[in-house]
Length: 433
Image 1 (tube, rainbow, N blue to C red):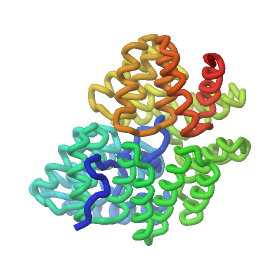
Image 2 (cartoon, helix red, strand yellow):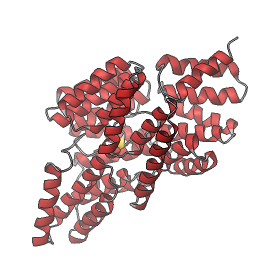
Image 3 (cartoon, helix red, strand yellow):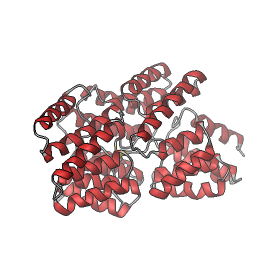
Image 4 (cartoon, rainbow, N blue to C red):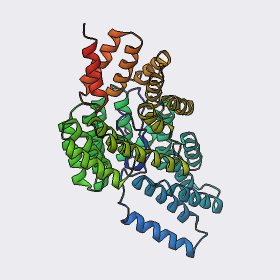
């Protein structure tokens, strides 16, 4: 039996790697849970062919419950790859059709519904579906992966540890080690996280899985301020799988940190054209804004709102991403409302940080500080978290503590954000003794 290299910390994931997102990512991104494989064939490739084959099969044999469950899972994966939320209702219909045809011990349909719920950020529902699947099939590792993702995003540390350990015992590989790595980074153990990812990489033979592991290692470098090393890692990920959009966006992130803004803009634009994920649109918009390109930034923010509206119309509850956007580029009061609702659903560090920042932007700094403390309580040495807390402390007149947090943000990553890193440096200069 393999034991998680976690001591007493929790194990997690980045839940539905929404639309080709990644496990670690920047704090502006709410992670979401992907399938067993970290990446999958590009749209128009074998996944699209599999969907069409199953649709044809079901036209001839509409009573085939396993085929409906398989088709539902394929629709969830297609949505993840394309950021096209219109696949979610199709997945929902197919998975429920499977359950109607085979209501007893339909593990695949229940697991698929759990993955769908994670993708829609309905994490409590995802946990319920996974537990129902495991009641019938306790060794079904895919259901343990769904449960790990759901509990992680709900902020259930002990429950996530239990589920992740079970996942690793049943299926030591990419799906389990990458989840462990994400949690280790969140708990301030980036070297252990890198070791977990190297274990995953050593056992990854599929090009998509290798690209995913390379990408996650690059994310650790980028989040630690090692932009040149990160750039090399993203390039290695793209060499393994040129269709892996998250690595393309990561390459843009590293290029921006290195001052290679023309290349960064081109890569971001290509990533957003492939997969119009709100995170890519936000990062591209903020890079434009940092360069004084107001009209181009506004266009990316308009597209972000449109994508958020489309996702909501197809059952996605993503108050985190929209709240983060509203806090910095829209209505802070609305951001607070959105993020209070998200915090009511799940006590997770990304939500704590986002709510802290929204409260600060709305002028409620005393309450904001309490949430900023919660965001850092697990030990994740995150530059943006430190910046947010430092700005809040500065607003409260706690200059010494503010300088410590702002300094820490820049020490972790001097280029952690194209808009906020310059603000951190300016605040330190303005408060110099």
